[in-house]
Length: 265
Image (tube, rainbow, N blue to C red; front, top):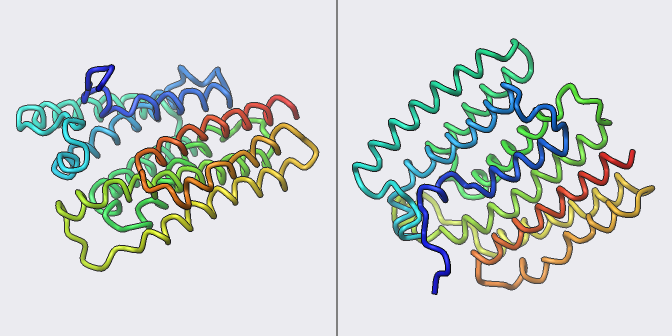
């Protein structure tokens, strides 16, 4: 029984992911939340999500019926118009940014998202790593020109990449059947144990980095070691949807670690 009605247009925007982006930006530098750079970055994430659903509406009909608003031709036409309007608005904010690392970085993220939605996402594991790298690079853009220590930036970007990679691996397993029917792979899919192994290693890397980067700070170490808690589920749970949600929940633990690190040095 569903307590809440399905809202495909809302879910297509990935509100939780966007909320995490806003929360990260607030932790790093609250003054940037209304800057042209952050608005352009936020719009880019929205457009990337819409474009992804426009590309994957056939596979989503098999994997998650009713979750994609672009099942009908009329909705797809409206979605394409919305995408063009959003891109024009994104370009306006892009023009308000000086020619610097932020501007070039946003253009690079846009190209990488386009490549992911059109082609890279269909490559097992490589597509997961590609998207995790995009997320880590977005965090690097948020860190640029901030007085935060380089070790904090390095730890945060690597942790975001590792946790996001682990979650994307299980999202791929969750959608593997529908994706294969929509676009049959040209080569055998990697075994499930490889996905589980890579996800486990990713979470262990986060825990290890938390220890080596923050040996003198108790709270970040304890929170970092917390990423070892979901390992039994990662290794044995066959409910990939639950695993994906579990790892996303642990992203909040990473944000808490980041907050403690930034406000204790």
